[in-house]
Image 1: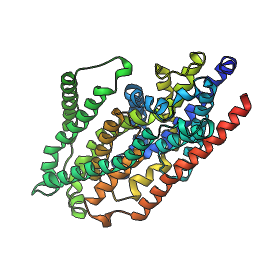
Image 2: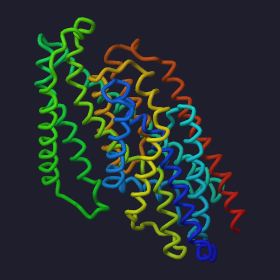
Image 3: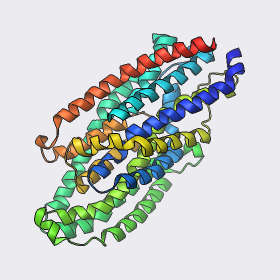
Image 4: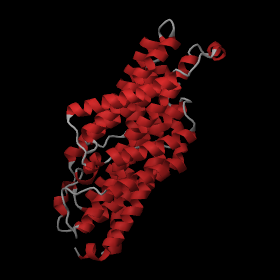
Length: 421
């Protein structure tokens, strides 16, 4: 308790710095998952992607980021075992932030699309094993998270595959695909607005003390979806047939219809990513602030200050603006060839899966979901359309992330403990 009183301000400053570093890494690495398909399909430039992501990543983190945070903070380890030594949890959370941040920086500079969720979960487990003991880890929760790593890409891939097949049936496979694309486009845009709005209002706004009934949520989501569909319709109707482009590629004009539609899926994916992955950075930060402000009390529940959400959102934005382009290429161009229609399906499927999963409180991996969605789109054209070597390399980087995060966190935990005790 004396350590908390003596060094409380120092711990909060360290949590702020390490939390910003960790969320910078989230922006630098996971921006590929949020925006890689949009850039890889040619629908957006890198600069446009950065601007859109900056706005909607921040909005997702601030408006809908509070729900997942509780899982990272108090679901993975049992704080009851260290209720008499709160400084242990403070050192552990600081070590986890620093460990995950360093690994994400290394991966980002190399262009590896690793999972930020893997990084922080592995780091928290590593600190718990080193600093408390095997019994401190909630292995049931870990098994749920591991299961979500398998289920998430399958769900994302299945949804993307079904969306792609629906576009083939309704648009690409008909006699006049361009007219059909302009007719069905607003419907797909409506789906974007409706799904994201509905799930966010169901569970995402509780920390803002804004709760709606199920019927009110459906009504509000329908209104928002219709409003977005009208904007989409106005943009789509301005697209004209390009006979010269159609000579080289039969569906060139059709793909032009999907380019403005990608604006909406890009916004949705950035919002979904911010709502889910900001927890990886602000969860441990919130734990440190809570312990220091309470004078050393390790509480099962604590209010999440909105300024912590603001810090998390700001860190993500800076990260994606400074280093995001390095990782963006991998998912956007190397797994399979993306066109605007394929990118639309992959991004909408990934966004829907991320938001649905994040609202259940499971810290799913956006990386897994995005890769699964891109693979699902590729499978709609056959296995030959996917570069299996790239997929293999990505999976290896995922497997390495957990142990690296754990070992680094254990090392930093003992270092911090030695410095302050």
